[in-house]
Length: 474
Ligand code: BYC
Image 1 (spheres, rainbow, N blue to C red):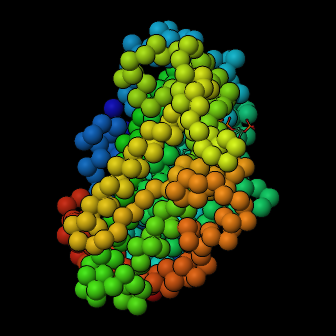
Image 2 (image 1 turned 60 degrees about the horizontal axis):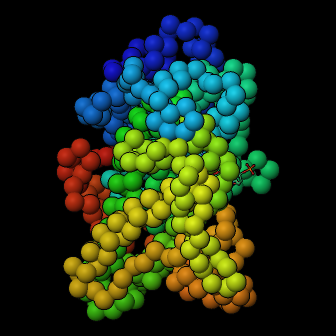
Image 3 (image 1 turned 30 degrees about the horizontal axis):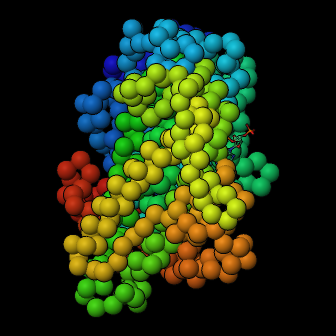
């Protein structure tokens, strides 16, 4: 479905047919732009950035690239095309036509899911706002800004739903999304990972890999929703999400690749003095970001998740492709949990274990990406293997929140864990070292010492393409 760019708010939902909604969103727009100018990428607002903009919500609609100043980016409301015959695929309403309006009895719960999703989007922009100043290349700078503007658009996606379907409390929640701030002690973002700092580019690539990947799984579950506007919104958001995951996975892969290159050239594991990041430090960053992201799936056993599912509000990953009854009332699911100093598997009602089932799909996906990083190491003939820590490692939410688990899955005393944590997660010295490498590299085609160039440029452009122009001080 093509997108109408002639209106103040680009959209493919015939916004001009609903004057009230259009006016409400136009009234929210200046607050959004104000938030962007205060909390969006610092120092780069007047640069021209080679960005892609959606022109329609089908696959061809992404082909449009051009220079845009970020504050002029056409944020708007884009939903995947409706399927007039779509039916609810799971839960108590399975088989019924999907809802085009909010079902009254689920109003509060749906609003909360939408607000939680919406809150992560501006949070990530806030977390990343200082990174531009230390970009490893123009290619990476442009990718960062692409991700940032699209997270801003994802905020619009959720705000549209709040304004269009939740009346006055929806409008209040939409305001709240512009008020909370990542890491703010008085008014923080809702979920833990979105209040952490993203101080350097290694953290950023890890975030885009591990935390954005939670986004992929949560959006895919919401894309199954019986509330059709939410499902259609999330389906289009997922097409944007794919690029964010690419930035994360390929970013970490390029750091690994450069480290291996330096290891071979200098015949040492300690590549710091040659401007690289040791594999052992990369491993600690993996441990940190993976464990923070696992918490985002919620508790292993959750009546909230069971209720979302039974009510038809939030499905499972690829719900429609699954060959079970889509009700789960009689089935069980195995979860891991601590039990008297060891970790055991326990059968639990599948309905209660939905968060864990989604986390399992996520873990399998992370394993696949990890294997690709390890392939880079193997092909460089370096003896080292990156690993994902145990799911119980460093958790703050769920069954493992009260125990101290090592990366290999052993429960130890809290005192021992604290004594040994410098082996597992980045120490202040590790972070300072990584920070010391973060010098901006803005000559076209040049890359910082700690990262390999990508295989190709964005949109088939050569690597020395001027992906961002008009840099501050240039
Ligand atoms: N931090 O029953 P439980 C993305 C709360 S990322 C703080 O297990 P539930 C993106 C929970 O609210 C995707 N609190 O929770 C990525 C509950 O509170 P109440 C974001 C937490 O509801 C990168 C209590 O603990 N989207 O898009 O089953 C860049 C009991 O928990 C946390 C979504 O998350 C936490 N980590 O599951 C940009 C989808 N976890 O009821 C963007 C929408 C739990 O006791 N959200 N709690 O007051 C959801 O589906 C669910 O809210 C959650 C939690 C899966 C997050």
